Every structure is written in C-alpha cells, then in structure tokens.
Amino acid sequence: MKVLVIGAGNMGLTYAEGMASSPLLSKHKLRIFDTDPKKIETLRQQPQFDVYNNLDDCLPKADLVFIAVKPFHSENLFKIMKPMLNDDQIFVSLMAGVTIETIQQQLGKSKVVRTMPNLPAQVGKGVTSYTESETVSKIELLMVRNLLDTTGTSIHVATENFIDASTGISGSGPAYVFYFMQSMLEAALKMGFSDYDSKVLVSNTFEGAIELFNQNDISPKSWIAKVASKGGTTQAAIDSMDDNNVKQLIEDAAYAAFDRAVELGKK
Image (cartoon, rainbow, N blue to C red; front, side, top):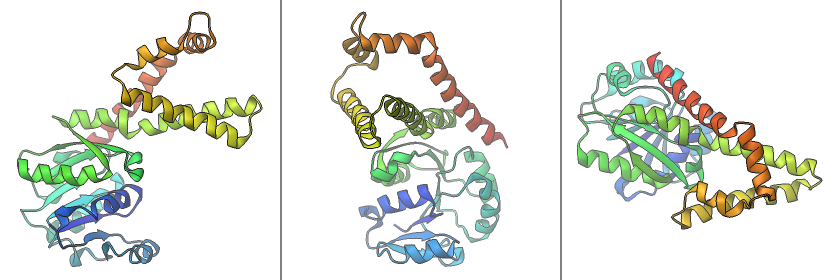
C-alpha cells in the first residue's frame, strides 16, 4: 500500500513517524509532502520517508492519503489536489472541523475518513476517534484503523457528531490537563518548592493517579472517596473546588470546544 501524508506539521509528522513502520506499507516507504524547504531538508535525512515538495510526483499514485494541514488551508489545497485524484483513493482527514461532506464536495471523491487525533500521539499514547463515509468498505476502514493505531489507540464512532464531541474531550483535553498541572506547579512554587521539585511532585502525581485508574476498575469518584477522609486535607481541597464550581467549569470548557468544532464545520 502506498500511503501519503500531506503536511509535516506536529500531527502530520507524528502520524507519519508512527505509520512508517507499519507492515501495511509492505515494501513501500511512507510518502510525505510539504512545501517548507527547511522541513523538507530535515525530512530527507530520515530514511523511512520518501519526501516530496510537488504533489504531482506523489499524489496520483497514492492509495491512502492523510490530510494534515490547518483547516483554513484546506480549500486551496483541495483545488490543487482535485485534478490529480482517482476514484479508488481513500482520504483520511486529521483536520478539526472540516466535515466529510465538505471534503467530498471539494475533492469530488467519496471515500473519506474523518478523525480527531490528539497530542499524546507524539509519544505513542494518542487516542484517535474516527468515522467514515458510506463508500468506505469494512476492509478499507480496518486498514485505516491499523494505521491510526500506530500512534496509540483508536475509537470508531457512529457519526461526525461524536468527532466534534471528541474534540471537546480528547482533542483539546491534553490542554485541560496541562492547565491543571500549571496551576499545581505555580502553587508548589508559591509554597517554596524548587522548580525541579515542583515538576517531580506534579508530574509523578498525575502519572501515578492515571496508572491507578488504568490498573483498577474503580471510578474517579470512588478514588476521590478513598483519598479524601472526612475533615482531612484532601477533603478541604475537594470542598474548595466544589465551592468554586470547578467541576461545572470543566464541563463547560469541554462543551465550548465541542461547540467550536461544530461551528468550524459549518463555515
């Protein structure tokens, strides 16, 4: 299978690096296209890639095309791509807010898979939700899933509404975690800890809590109950968050990202 990634930004390169070792590529190297001369020079030093700066040289013969450009670049890109395509090609979008229907109309092709990736894919811990147009076969979808799984795990969803919802949870979610971490780091520094000790305290706390959650069939609410003794220090912190409506604010933030994804899809 000949796989092409269009766009070597953070997400495009992350998925390219993961997929480059997939057995689905057989004897073919993963193809990657970009227009930035500096990126192209860097990419050409990586032996797992065939690197291109001209779509004519790589797009017409690709079987599966991952589109990883900024959404506002897509319309112009699709105009350039359209004359080079064939009906057997499958297009996988890594772009937020661009609907399957929009991609089909602008490319004039029917086989489209829309995804919502997230940043931890860079360390093999990503989660990618995905859904497909009706013309994508089960076998083709399985191939796409196997490629997506090279960066972590993937979740098939029934409709594009869940792609937009995934934006609010997993797509934007790492930023919520970093926001919480930053707040805890700043609190630790104010308490007198060094930069190094603050980082260790916060990062290991998050890592340990996640490991506990993953290794046990216990809800976060139950874990809170295990840690927070009545009248104790943890309960004081939880009471403060409840008094300040933190839970509702986090839910509101997730829905804000969800609503923005829907809004982008209508433009």
